[in-house]
Length: 171
Image (tube, rainbow, N blue to C red; front, side):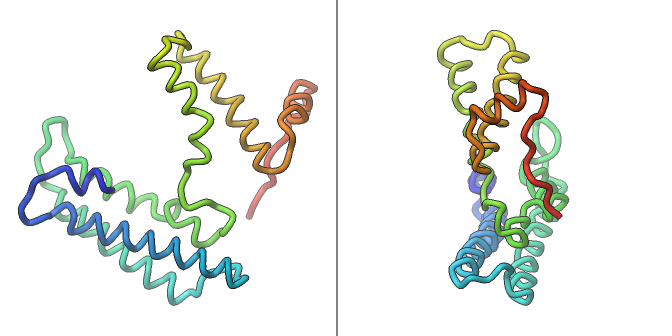
């Protein structure tokens, strides 16, 4: 959101008028989840969650409204696109407040791909996107297994034996 907020040099700060409150609502929710976890709770106070979501929803709605008709050389304005995505995927964005096992960011999921992207950019490795995609699939599988306490060699052995490890199903 920070990049969208800094996109324009608008003296009225139209972008930041919605990106900063939306981001702050998410950061406040992150802090509330951390406090609830520390207190031994398994869920956030419903009134607190409702208030945080209302702040977020209001900010995102303002982002859609202020960017809906703004021109951009390649189509829709990036501020509109971001606000629209945040609105349509709000349940996914706020999942960490309902299921405390879900991390606030998806950075752990992206880490296995960083090495491949770096190798493609610098070393010229991975001449085929298909080969890089297969490598990322295996890395993602091993990373997920490791996060669930399964040793990577055990996960590989079981997968090659036709009995791949699968993450537990959640409700």
